[in-house]
Length: 385
Image (cartoon, rainbow, N blue to C red; front, side, top):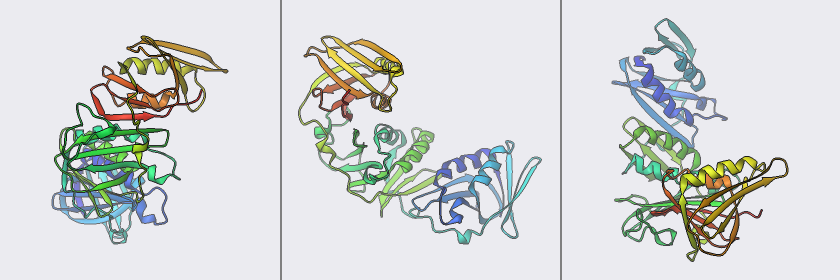
């Protein structure tokens, strides 16, 4: 193997696959990257056997070949090399020579034949979605995924294909999501809050529900941010979630478990709805949280005629209050929430967007959604303060 590739092209490929490298493994070879060159491309692949990824970069290939190199060492070297062209030459004994301008390294590798087959990457991605469309849905749900490894069925986002029916239903009818036809729904919950978004799609090849792991979606989100307005290929095939772009492909094993019946968490009757500007609530919460020391970041929301009073207190620091004007004509209602949860909900909206809060009493769940988009919503359980 003898190739010439620019640092920018190689660095981009490395960043895309780095997360798939096994961090702790009984197979040392999985700590390596698989590098192969053929035609006018160099391909960088990695896998921890749950998540597999391959990225390609344009290169001047004098002679093809393949090898595996320690991912951390190779990544550190490339990062520190000067900008410009990088020459990679594979010599006898699986030794890879890396040179750029006045810099030269020789690092030991391992035969590409020792590297296992990359699970899932042979599967096709039959469906096309806009990268921005998929990114928006992930951003509106991923924050609510559970980090409790003992509840593995909650360690990912539930993808659900709703075919030829009302896509929003009781989960929320709104400007963006309620027409008949095929819909994609994504749901995440950690038991304390739930995030749900439903959007119409032209068609999808999978049926029912699948659970895509949190780690995979975190990496997919990074890729989608780079793709902008382009379309990407997706597929749910043979127990894998597939994402494919023009120069990258990722395959993640699905979580094989039953997702809980999230409909039981959704309020069955319409509560009292109040609206306020999202940015105003965010600013007030951030200030009030300064006086909270407990991990749950509990704050009290007190609704009265035309007014919302947000307060917090702690024996160590003191207390804080904020008051916001809003349309509310009901009885005085005091309800406690985890302020961190409310901020994560608000982070999915723009500052100037109207935030609707549907109240279901002091002990009932709060329902939060953009004023014009009830098809994307969050359910937050109240706290006892």
